Length: 74
Image (tube, rainbow, N blue to C red; front, side, top):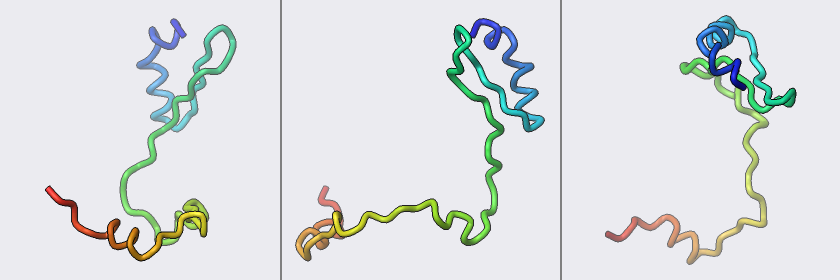
């Protein structure tokens, strides 16, 4: 961990080149530095399979649905 603190600039440079850096404490991995996902345009459908809908366990009756969709009172 101490080495990671003193070498942070070098570790960030590795990550910027696309490498993954694992930081360990007493020989046990505790963190990973990964390149950030670039912000930008996403392809339609690229998230398919990553969103899970709440099923029948989350059904609202008509009154609950109306309350949920109603504007907030101030």
